[in-house]
Amino acid sequence: MSTSDQYIYQSGFGNHFSSEALPGALPVGQNTPQVCPYGLYAEQLSGTAFTVARSSNQRTWFYRIRPSVMHRPFEPYNKESHMVGTFDTRTTEPTPTQIRWLPFVIPNTEHVDFIDGLHTIGGAGDAALKSGLAVHIYAATASMNKRAFSSSDGDFLIVPQQGRLDITTEFGPLIVAPNEIAVIQRGMRFSVALPDGPSRGYMLEVFESHFELPDLGPIGANGLANPRDFKTPTAKYEHTNDEWHIVNKYQGELFVAAQDHSPYDVVAWHGNYAPYKYDLANFAVINSVSFDHVDPSIFTVLTCKSAQPGTAVADFVIFPPRFEVQQHTFRPPYFHRNCMSEFMGLIRGEYEAKQGGFLPGGASLHSMMTPHGPDSQTVERATKRDLLPGRVADNTQSFMFESMFQLRLTKWAIENQQRDHDYYKAWQSIPVTFNPNQI
Image (cartoon, rainbow, N blue to C red):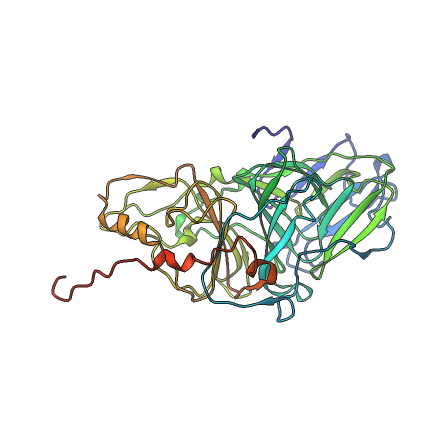
């Protein structure tokens, strides 16, 4: 698989960007002149309410060949959809048991694109109320052809596991490879091509607020995901008169509208509401250099904050390659019962707390207050090893979607043929070493 990326990006997180594919296409000194340069139309895309505080306000101005309103009416999508937007007793069911899935199957048909390859694993809340989140996977074999996708429900955080994604957006194109992520926010239209053939990955959707960098507190001004390493596309436009279909996710259901031109006819844009990508290899790891295994929140890349301070609708957390030097310490992740829900995926390699079973392209879910931790083999090795300085997780990248919400699972996820019904056995042979006569 190639790692080359021919596109040009702008650097920074949350910046007010400006980009134009033709010189002088951006109006000077105002947003909506009577006649825009090159005969373009001005159109605003709002990511927050008009009256949100300026420090949090997000919007972008497009200068496009046709306004996006030039389409025919939306109609229900005529293919079977496996996406869910309301997580209640009609659509999902709860379970507190530990769940693991072997790698999700990529279809053996040649004509499953990104949209038709999306399946909801689970979630919480209601997209119509802008409350909660959804966890999806995608498994696709074909590029999207004259189709664009967007969500009215929330922001997508996309984690490729197999194969690069060549994503065209209204803001310009971006390539996203395994070990990179992309965030495409509410209302942004995009198309996905598969330059490496069949592709698989994970997707987190948050129904409220937007992702932001976590506060660093006493860490200081630098560390974790640094703002300069985020990349936003630059303007590139198409001027066509061919048939396109716009597929919109609305309250968890899909609708489609036809139009006689490309939706990617934006010649210039400016604003701070834009898609972006990030290479996980750029994460500056912070860790204990004395003793104890620190909490995994220290590995947070992005967070979507809730109204409750310090508590997230969702955190995106990674477990990257790093040194481990802690002394007198059980070094693997500790045994845990959490007031948050933990959905984990593996991009490549072998997760440090699981020996086999948890495989790239698979996943696990440890629900709120459900016990979890390292498996029997990891425990035995960790309690007997010499605690020399060393490396952990080289050639590995695992991640976690952590949420304050209790997740309900779709029938597709619960009955999936890749569900590992023997997962509970991972802990059953942990030895009892208690001796009341020896400290």
